Length: 224
Image (cartoon, rainbow, N blue to C red; front, side):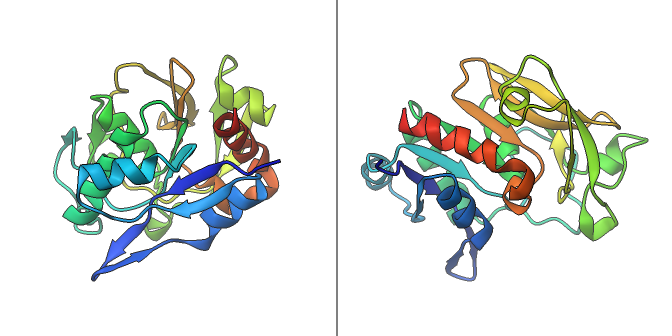
């Protein structure tokens, strides 16, 4: 069976694109063909590249600035304009295909739907635990909504997840719904009402022993 072509966005630093190998391995293990998205800056060029794809994975990254509530903390960088432009171009070009967002990717999807985000959720929401490993955050459980794709695919009501974020979704965007939360109320997963988009705040590509079915479902939807 042919492997569907899955575009994977990358990080950008000092003139170079970088892609953590975890993402590539997750898509390959799930039956997809991983294709890093080039950071072109022209809409027509990106549209031509998007025509090669069957789905899009938006990876982790820096801060989200659209819909931002508050000021960025000193330990979080704003996105480079080159990545910001490229991510917005590929997302706009993939409006009919499945999209998966991870960490920054989930927040990016939420922002594209007009949602808002806390610049530093620990500082802005009293009682919030550390969700960044660099701030002492550790694995923690999330509760998954019963009527959700994530619950159906993972076939479990809870999951112990890793945590690498400083920002967090404040208001969920139009056409999206929150489908998982941590004990302190942080939104840990969102899904679009039409079922095309899904985002998770944790990094499932780093815990494939528990989340491979999640990537397989995404690849199957891209194939279909």
